[in-house]
Picture 1: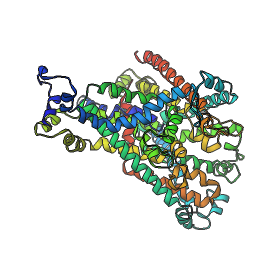
Picture 2 (picture 1 turned 135 degrees about the horizontal axis):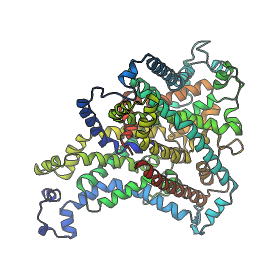
Picture 3 (picture 1 turned 90 degrees about the horizontal axis):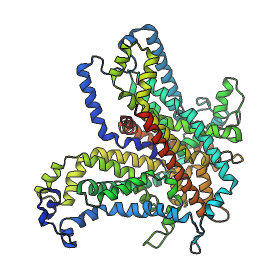
Picture 4 (picture 1 turned 120 degrees about the vertical axis):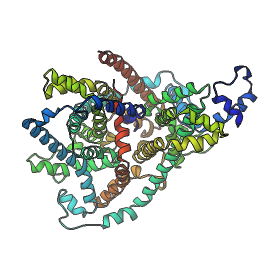
Amino acid sequence: MTTTDLIPAAPALEQAPPVRGSRRRRREVETDADRGILSRADRRAPRVRITTNGLHALMLVLLVLVGLVPLLWLLKSAVTPTQDTLTNPLGLFPHGFAWSNVVKAWNDVHIGDFFFNTIAMAAGEWAVQLLVATTGGFALSVLRPKYGKILSGLVLATLFVPAVVLLVPLYLTILHPPLIGHSLINTFWAVWLPAGASAFNVVLVMRFFDSLPREVFEAARTDGAGTFRLFWSVVLPMSKPIIGVVSVFAINAAWADFLWPNLVLTDIAVQPLSVRLPQIQSSTDLGVYLAALAIATLIPVVIFLIFQRTFLRGGGLGGAVKG
Amino acid sequence: MTVTQQRLAPSAPRAARKHNPITWVQRGGLTTLLFLLPLLIVFGVFSWSPIVQSVIMSFQKTNLVTAPVFVGWDNFVAVFNDPLFYTAIRNTGYFAVLALLFGYPIPLVAAVIMSEVKRMKGLYSVLAYLPVVIPPVVSVLLWKIFYDAGPDGVFNTILGAIGIPPQPWIQDAATAMPSLVLQATWAGAGSTIIIYLAALTGVAPELYDAAEVDGAGIGKKIWHVTLPQLRGILFITLILQIIATAQVFLQPFLFTSGGPVNSTTTILLLIYQYAFQNSLGGAYGEATALSLMLAVFLAILSIVYFRLTARWSDQ
């Protein structure tokens, strides 16, 4: 369900270069190639300049209020005594700090354990998704068996099936998996394996592999590289960008997932933060609870700030697909 | 391994190709299959088979103890006879409409303004995208605290500062759904803004030049150049938003559990309740029947939508 908003990004990766190219071409004939709605003349007009500057300042204030302030409030309240947050939620440390909130959340509420469960869940989902997408993408786009077209069609078709259709039968599959003979409920496999069935990843990787020069593969073959060698030493090293994109999305999606882990990880010992946090709400002191929420937010925000470009391009380049 | 070269080289003599299992293995058929194995297993067991099963299960009574029995359209009839089904449709529709009213114009206006920013453009994008990065569960739980109905709740304190009395937010049937939509819009607007920003950089500057030659002012340029140029992406984000809101689950589940008095029971919540919160044991048949109906409805909606917009797009 989390991938639906990313779908338009799929064709974007290969469409990006032409956009850049066409803009460069424009620059040769155009004087003001980077222009948008406003022309230079518009920008020079005092009334327009004051209005746009005003709008931009207002926009910045709104974005800070809407995007940053809630996050800062969470950080502030995580280290504020509960009583202060209850009686004066907007006050700035009227009675000092309560660093103990964080310690209590980590140790007493066992947020530390759930934090590591989340990491285990995300790491496994990441590994399975990469394995399936790279090996499958390699077979379908580089090796190209005769039945490849049908298979890619079957993979692609699952993109159009809403995730909720899978919910009940998938749950029963995890309850009674084929061949294994015992339930996967309350094991990480219950979240790792279904995560691998992401058509979005396979399509993304296939598109990237399709764009790699086939001459390189043939040269490697001529030099005596076998199929495994071709995959491991030629294709994978060339695919770092797409592996990065898939990795960032996979880890982020795992961190965000709730509905599925909530169903199949009912044992507290294996629960990730997203499943545990709603359950501890009523039994936890507010300050400690807010510290727990802050801890759960930390990693995704840090990942975002480091890989900004991947997020903003991946989420945004869909704009290159114009109707 | 050298034999596999033939498969890549299109010049390999056709006459040399014989089709039997041995030549298939020699040409690398088995190796290809080995590479496909993870995909085949994972998709087979956790995607294709559950999709087929959900169609079968919607015509069955399953209770996990005795063997499933085919019951024809009984599950569908049971769903249609459930008064909550109509409540869920109404609520989901209400959510979708409110989400469109709040959530559809805001990112567009924001993106058009942000696209004209010359300095610190990156900062604007990062700020707009921050709410998207916060894990959805944390985001909902945080807003649940913001929505505290007491006079000392975060939002009520802010409202109090400008003289508005405390609101019940998620605790009242009338304000619950708009409160859910507000949070959902906050959490989702950033990604739509980023999509529009990228689309805006793709608008050819020549079009604006031409519009100016024709004497268009700023307003006319936005109306006659920017918006028509974004038409394609606006159509796509609209249908994607409708598809996403039709499957809203997290907000009603975590904020209100469908209350007060079922005012926020959505279709997905009802499916979940049928299957997993049923005191009589999981009504898996009804749950799959309803999810299948939702999927078919969304598929038909998308097809009709793309037919219609394709006509409007080719002008």
